[in-house]
Image (cartoon, rainbow, N blue to C red; front, side, top):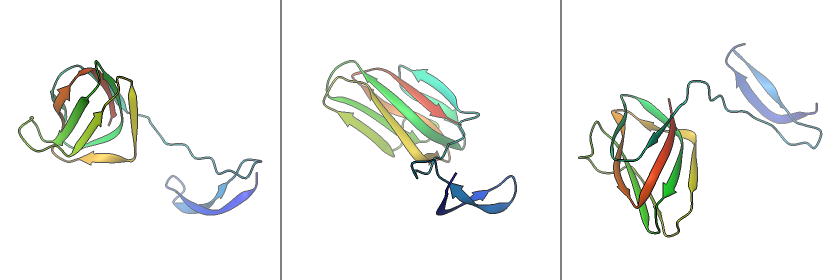
Length: 122
């Protein structure tokens, strides 16, 4: 495989290695998703207490003009830190690269016109 001009940190070997490209010259990377706990929610409330990394969320609206709000708290009383609004009734996957960080806890503050959300976190 050809090498790229990009250097990557190999934490297992504790050294920098030159990125490898495929035969087309494209760099291929892979994110480690070991330990991510997907959970389906249909209502508001605490998803995970304590430090949480949000990797992705899939929103399944029940109708148009949906709203999903997430906050960094143990309950729904504080302001939203992430909001999703959509005007069409279609599923919406959202990836967070790097993951969205929550220090107190990941809580669903608001679900309006939502059938369910599926959340991938660790």
